[in-house]
Image 1 (tube, rainbow, N blue to C red):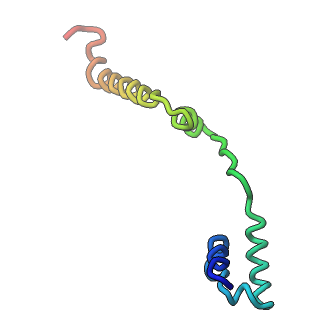
Image 2 (cartoon, helix red, strand yellow):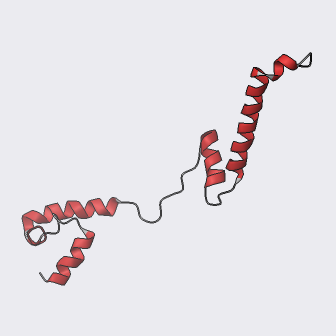
Image 3 (cartoon, rainbow, N blue to C red):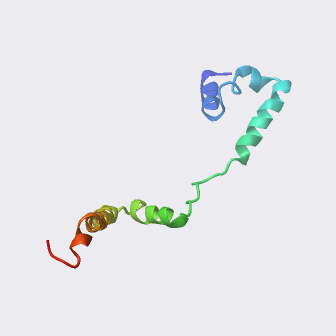
Length: 101
């Protein structure tokens, strides 16, 4: 077996299976047949796209997917403003609702 043939087979088949002993004799042909049948069963072509499910999955697919947007930053700022106002109201503003300071 030439170096070129051995090199070509080593890129397709894992190294322990592509040894010269495994390629040559009849007892090792069974092992080679199992490896070939394994690689024949593998799917071909690009992997299918995963469909997003749930609120966070759809949000991530929409805003972070193929066309990322700045909307998550805006949503975070608005969320922080709402939480900040709610805390400010709870800890301070509700005491001034009916009478001034």
